[in-house]
Picture 1 (tube, rainbow, N blue to C red):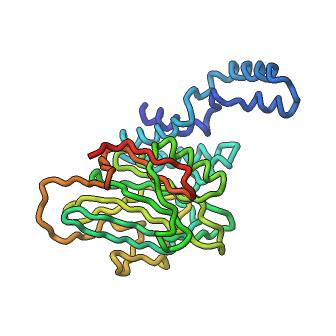
Picture 2 (cartoon, rainbow, N blue to C red):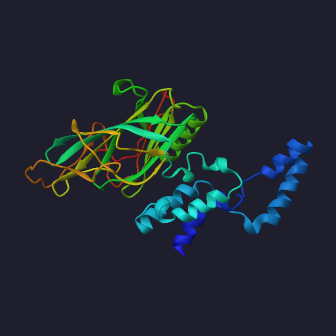
Picture 3 (cartoon, helix red, strand yellow):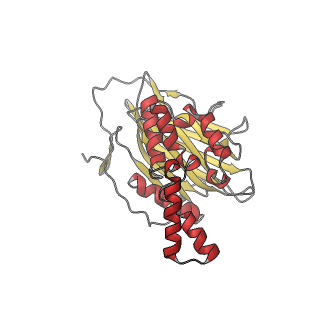
Amino acid sequence: MIRRGLLNAYLAAYRYPYIEDQWMQLMYESEFGLSPETTAAIQQAYDFVMSPFTYRGTRSDIDKAAGLYGQFFDTPILRGESQAIKRAIQSTFDRNQAKAGLLDVDERRVWLADQQVTVTPHGDWADVEIYETYDNQTIEQQEILYFFSLPESAVITGIWLGESSDRRRAFPYTIAPRGAAQQVYNEEVERRIDPALLEQTGPRQYRLRAFPIPPIGQGEMHLWFTYKVLQQAGNWPLPQLAERRNLYWTRQTQRQINGKSASSKDWLPASIAAPKTPRSIAKSICLGALTSSPRRLTTLACRRGSGLQSSSTAPTA
């Protein structure tokens, strides 16, 4: 029952009209030039007839359902309900709703040309940086998405998006409330301005989005993200991929781990061996004026310009 309800909320945009939709009123105003009073009455009559089939939630329920699904069933909803999700989207009359969306799961549009993992140990915890270069294989701008997990001890510390391999020239990140960051990201996508968004969507669950990856022949896009993590069983844990959208890699993808060539059929290896160090009783991770709790939901966003104000709700030291 819980699984079916969460899936229904997640796919509401593809299965039901929303109670807040006003498309009938807008259509009669634009097509027939009727007065707002008349079209409002038509909309009300339509809403009354359609009320048994109308979804009475809001579009924010989509993210809520995805987060709750991950908490209840310990797997991303995209993985647990992949067939039902694909059937729903393929049946919708508006295929544009799937832009950078669920139909793009495992699509091969953007090639991962280069990946470099750098681990800097500090006793029994380490700074980890993952740097990637993306090469669009289509004639249209593309968005890439990752869904991945990290251990509870991990704390995301930064994300950068740039048009060159020099991180100093990349667009800096800010910290923002999740809803505000998503709104700015969507606005920047519509304006074709370069944003990236890294969100914690649930316990140990993260979503990374970047746009636009320029069309083929118009340059590459470079992305960095960093986190701190405690050693586990003599290893440094790396992100574990749940789903990807629009992105793929091949044997020709150049991979390095701490400056040495590496190979992998997966996005990343599960972990990197750590040097042996004396066991520590307790650790805290402090980022200057900001102390992040591994269990606290966080959102990092980077974009061109400085219109997104920094706002953090993490506990202070």
